[in-house]
Image (cartoon, rainbow, N blue to C red; front, top):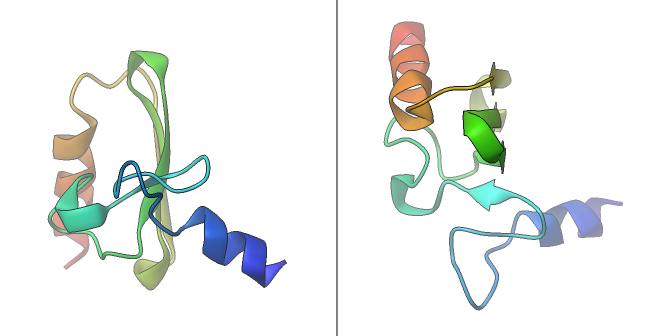
Length: 79
């Protein structure tokens, strides 16, 4: 439901960069070039699924040593 989606993308009390199972781009935590509404699933070994709703963009990274730089470079190439 839309309520569940809103809850998953709302910062938790313990960590403003984390919702319910999603990492949030709170204060540019994932990328300064991404909107505040962007979010990501992050796994071991640099595996990331990054969602930028405002650009209708999904970035999937596997075994990436510096996901933040790669995401920022991709977002910079779009402007």
